[in-house]
Length: 371
Image (cartoon, rainbow, N blue to C red):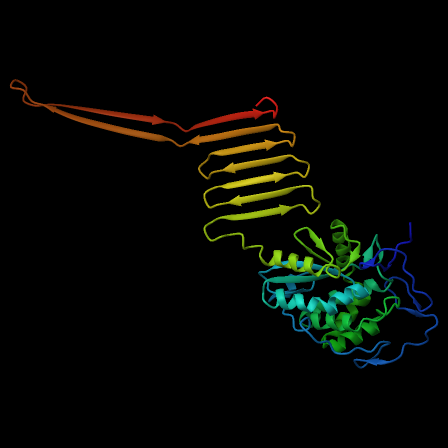
């Protein structure tokens, strides 16, 4: 097995041995040490930096953020009431850069600017507990989260600035000096507390939470888009990315206005799918465990419930629970009789019939062979 680290694969930045060559080396989270490249040089944004940065342009820079950004742990664009799609990437990954620069702006215009979807960005900076794409990758992730925490209005311009000017992945370029240069180019206003935050590694627990989430989704290559347990590679299949975003955008469109609504929930691992259909008069729930066993429960909204269990081998079990509400009948008859010797006689009969609530349960078993 190869040592933990990262190189480029044909479909994205994946976990394999990472090599910095003789350019730069650094301890995780530490500043790079020049081994053959000499002192850092150049000017960018008014501070010494190795790489110059041009101002960002495009839809990402202009993306709107939720009205209460402090309620969002990760940088998010789009309206607060929209479904959230997650973009997993890495500030140093050239495949993430390719997607962000070439295709992401179009998706933002189609789904975010129209208010149909919200998108959050999460950085996969660790895999198997080790830095992913270089020892400086965690620091780049800390900086992104710190910008979001201290100056959320500037995050997406900063995001666009870094990816449009991304230095070579093999270089440990994510120094505080270079990150500050990117911030100044992007117009970030509060760099001092952000840089203090980065130097202290305040956001590291949040970054590691993202790595845990990526593991749960089975993600070891980036970039990836995730929604409702589904994972797609937007740099490989842009149509699949559109389909995923369209699914998120139309998540609430199953309600036809007459109370008919269908909701499907998957566990993300293909093991169980639960579909609930509600027509305004009752509810039908179907659960498929992924192994051929299906349970369907029908509730008509009046207390009558039918459950059918199919074990996948033709053996069906049906259980019916029927509830009859209390019924009361009152009948009153009045009869009046008059004769010569009895002036008036009156007879009154009251009859009341009461049936208490009755529940009937019927179970039918079909073994699939003899009926």
